[in-house]
Image (cartoon, each protein chain N blue to C red):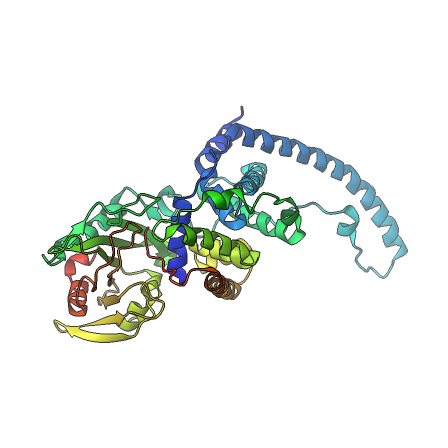
Amino acid sequence: MNEQELRDGLRDTMAASSPPPSMNPTEALDTAKRAHKRRRATWAGLGAGATVVALAAGTVFALTPSGESLPIDAATGGVPTHGNGPVDTTKTTWPNNQPDRTQHNGPQADKAAGVLATLKAALPDTLKVDENLTHQGSGNKVTMSQAQFANYYGPGNQQQAWEYAAVVSLTRAAAPNGGHGHVIVQVNPPGNEGSSSTDVCTLASAFWSSEGPCQTRVVQGKTVGVTTKGERASLDNVAAYRYEDGTVVWVAQSKDASSSQSTGSMSQPPLTADQLAQLALNPAFKVK
Amino acid sequence: MTDRDTAFADYFAARSDAMRRTAYLLCGDWHRAEDLVQVAFTKLYLAWKRIAQREAMDAYARQTLVRTFLSERRLGWFRKENVAGEHADTVLNTAIPGHGPEDRMVLQEALKRVPPGQRAVLVLRYWEDMSVDQTAQVLKCSTGTVKSQAARGLQTLRDLLTDQMTPTFDRKRTR
């Protein structure tokens, strides 16, 4: 199990879980208000207690002219704070009031959808995209696109770096019942901290911890890194290409369906390694 | 109802489900998860005037949730109170999408057996998708500790999964 596999495992697990009904906001508010009242009462008590402690400390200080500090905190018993100090508002926060990294609707989501459309259009006629295959339990379609916020960058950390991913579930056009495979494209525009390397093999190997051996291929005069399947890798091949401006395009494939539906896997990966490398060079993937 | 109460109730309605899922991954029990969420939101209510931005509320609530979980584990309170934690939820959750029912149950069970500190790092890094820096801020530790705890947690999970039952556990990206 690598990082990506754990990430996916957690999401699949929660997507198919059976949580109890949502918690009641009114009850939560009542509990919070009761805690608020208790705390006010506690502070009032502590205020009176502190006066007593201060008087006692003053008395003891008078008896210890060396000036050594005394364990006043221990004497008061302390206030259980669980370490919750003021919030550091300088932390990275999701842009546009998003609750998480993913933008489900909006300009970034549209760009990811564009990557998916490009991928579908660029596949050879020997492959057929399955729009309906779903992940069991969650019901999410395997063929999908996703835009995720990556990090802030640039002067004053004012610019947003995003990553755009698309996945297609595939069958052989000549054998639609012969099992499913899938192809993934991810595009990281400039500024993305996850694609700072200039070495295409480093980039290819880093994609979902591919871990397999990597070789460079020169296609149309451009160098692409292509991995073959490693021992723990879930992907058969990953191709990575880096544009001069820092944009990185990954194209990965697997002969497995990426679904629990009993469709079976392809006997071979959907594309050859050369086709994968050529696909990575498709300029239409270069999202701006 | 005051403005603060109204805003709190609205915020709770919007975010408590997501918080409860994170809490569930931390403690492995829906009932305990609800307790953790209640504690986190109560502390948020008490600190409401200090936190003006929605993003800061998210960060504060998440931070409080994780620290409360770790604090209770250290005190041993959770172990004493978690009388039903090993049963109902895992029995219900027997269908992992993509990999059969046993794999999902095994992942949940294995995660519960990862030491709490490592588990917290795994949940923040791979469920909340937080960066190493953000995780370090929440847990008040160094980035090096986060990296080492994440690596150890993953290794612990690998060992547990190998020991238990899934020689072909092989997750794919499904997001």
